[in-house]
Picture 1 (tube, rainbow, N blue to C red):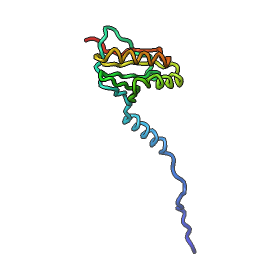
Picture 2 (picture 1 turned 120 degrees about the vertical axis):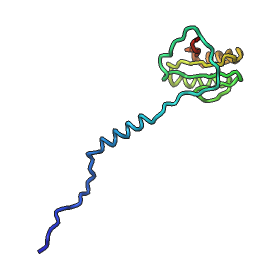
Picture 3 (picture 1 turned 180 degrees about the horizontal axis):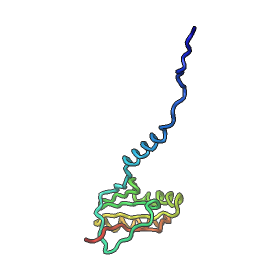
Picture 4 (picture 1 turned 135 degrees about the vertical axis):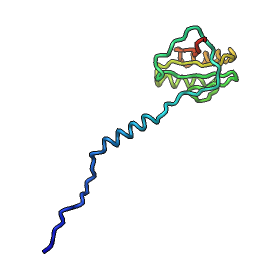
Length: 135
């Protein structure tokens, strides 16, 4: 007489603990992810008596101007003459863009004037000057 085995190995994968694993991974990635802030150039921002926050960082393009004459747009170094083309492309892709100009306290007025001219050519007329509060 042959005895039949009743314990058969199942080919199915148990999914009962799958939501727990997914939530643990989700929480892990939420805790360990660091949001990147713009580093920009090394500038000493001038102070102001009254400042206002921008509405949305999503629709903001940051332009950094250093006292050495270097310009950076969202952490990309560009030449002042190429600013109009770069900004025109950004305005076409998102017309709600506000330009935040962060310039060094000792930057030459010639460079600021060049930035203004290039922004006017690109039709980027919403301009905000960044400053820190006086202490």
